[in-house]
Picture 1 (cartoon, rainbow, N blue to C red):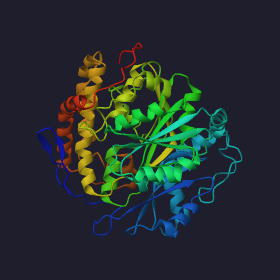
Picture 2 (cartoon, rainbow, N blue to C red):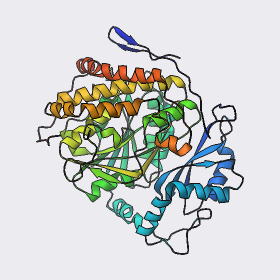
Picture 3 (cartoon, rainbow, N blue to C red):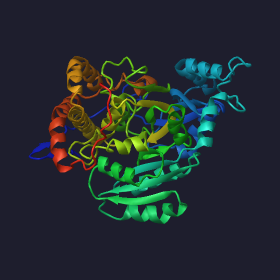
Amino acid sequence: MTTTADFGRRVVTPPRVGVQAVGPAAGAAGAFRPVLVLEAELERGLQEVLDAARCPGAKTAGTPRAALVLVRIHSHPLGLVALDLEAEDPSTEWPIAVRSRVGDALDAHLSADGLLGLGGYDLWEGKPARRPTCLAERRATIAAARPVTVIIATRERPARLARCLDSLLALEYPDFDVVVVDNDPETDESKRLVETRYVPTGRVRYVRETERGLGAAHNRGLKEARGEVVAFTDDDVLVDAHWLSELVLPFVADPNVGAATGLIVPAELQTPAQVMLEAHGEFSKGFAPRSVDLAANRPADPLFPFTPGRFGSGANMAFETAWLRDAGGFDPALGTGTTARGGDDLEALFRLVVSGRALAYRPGAVVWHHHHRDMSAVERQAHGYGVGLGAYLASALLEEPRAALSMITRLPAAVQHLRARTGAGSVASSELGAALGWTPSWPRALVRAEWRGIAFGPFAYLKSRREHPRRIPLATAARTRP
């Protein structure tokens, strides 16, 4: 089904496209075969992965040939590894595959824990550690337990919302509450679900926001927040048990940290569309913790700080509540549900960095995201991503006019980055493409749709600003030059 987005008198219709898989994820005739998504804790060994792949709950709509596995040690993610489910001898072939992809990271982790070389490490059988040194920070964070409010914006997706809330209530973190913001709902299904099943737990509250748009919904949640840290995720996400512990850790370790983001992993790869969305969206931001700012921790990226999306996105982020309130919250003219289509998370993270605060990335803060299964979602993302990006850049210029000269001087690097990001080879060169070893092309029709979206984004933002005026003034605190 082709979708349309009405921007005033102009209607943009993304083109219909098809995708065929090529490589190990494909069958003999090149037809797509689903990819099973699993995780492996190396303390327990890869034998556990084989058992999980064979269990009835792992059945898919087709016969998967490969499994994309999030490999962890002591619960910390090391990387994504593709394992051949048709291997003749998994006990031999799988450890080789894991070692080739994440061996250096595993050795570095074990060395830091003082466990490297203690009789070798059996990747198949595993080797439990009693109290790994690496978990000391997490234990301290849990012991200190700064109160956190988790905000979920939702609209007419009660089944997915229920799965998300179930995962949140299983968190190990001791001091958190959840605010569900029902954004301009058409029915009371989400309200009934939350109030009957989740409000009685004492951790979940329900509020309704009539102004359409993700930015407005997040602002309503921010207004209701009780925690010192406010965390955001989406209703189509499942959170890892350690999610909040890892996401809050940077705020405890460094008082200059004002925001933190984490790792986003696909919950399923059942269709070509899901693989395309995962690869092109670049949701995974790597497996090394890091912190960036405009001072000593400024990255080598010539486009920084205009590219906060390289360090995280709205499905997995947290802010110091006081800073976000003082900064005026999110721009209601940005985000899903507005003419601007997106960019609310990028704009907030950008303002955080230019205010002089640090942005931390913790891959141990894992969430599992359910991508749309149909190709029409790929079409919408291509154009919508472009509009949202263009809108975000326009908002950055309007809110930070001093950044204009800096942005202009970086224009050639920005164009080069966008060409690589939107080019036909962008999917194959992604981390997912590298892990799976297959090479689908990003259709040129979608490249054109994305670039048209980028060009139209500033106009969409100006229209959206008239529709969604900002009611909370921005903070007047001094800011650092980008």
